[in-house]
Image (cartoon, rainbow, N blue to C red):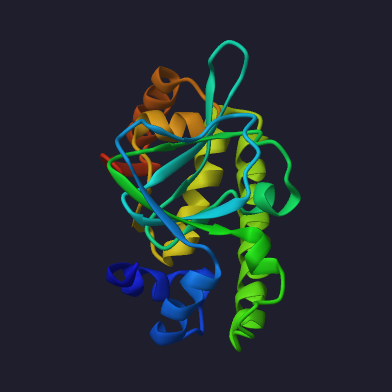
Length: 218
């Protein structure tokens, strides 16, 4: 785990905790590291999990599929970001699946060891708990933001809502999004062909410019 200390230090989960303390804490938290190949499942829908996952390299997609196989992209976790926190804390069966977007390494931390008093009286344990609560709050806000996008009445309104929020996040009219076209369609609960056609119409009307995942609002 030592080789991943720079990633762990930048992670919101370990915010404010020095490398030396992080290295000591990983043992207390029962950290395990696993490697996944592209499209390999990390967690299946319905699994009951006991650990918080933290991406070390690569990325994972958190997805939800209905009975007919229609996929909705809930979120993406990249190096330093965590996933499955809420499910691990509540022991609720997963309502989503988690799969590797590319070759990915993940560290798993047993949530029970995070939420209970450290047997070694780790002085930074309280900070870790606060960081976990902050992460959960941020995930909740992200889900509320996504709900704002997908509940717009038309596909154009969904796209404008999403692109406007990404522009605001970047603090500029030009920005990059973390999705390709299929992933963006899955995120907005839209058909890929319809989404691509709508983007082309918006470009033709002078509303936006784009090249792959780089966008500029006009």
